[in-house]
Length: 116
Ligand code: 5GP
Ligand code: ZN
Image (cartoon, rainbow, N blue to C red):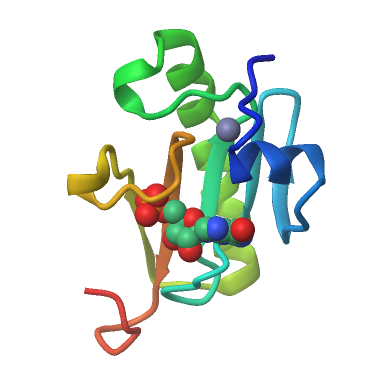
């Protein structure tokens, strides 16, 4: 499984940096974002390190997104949001700050939940 020594998300998968796990299987790991923009804000990552969408092949992209319905439903059950946004930033100009491909699952509650 390709990993990257300097990648904080690879270190999270390895358990070298603690995280609040939401879901894990052989290919994917999901955990609460340290900067919760809303309650239950979750990051979903493939265990295989790829930098962003430009460097990700179909197999990794498919495996990553295939788990999203299950993870979104787990978030729905736990946090009871009214809806959920799914976001993905690629490149610094687009707001990417961690260069291990990840999806943001952002539960939405109402217009005052703090996320625009
Ligand atoms: P990006 O800006 O790359 O789309 O999102 C990176 C996200 O990773 C940010 O929302 C940030 O809060 C989160 N993050 C950065 N470092 C850590 C960490 O060590 N633990 C966790 N749980 N989240 C992190
Ligand atoms: Zn990584």
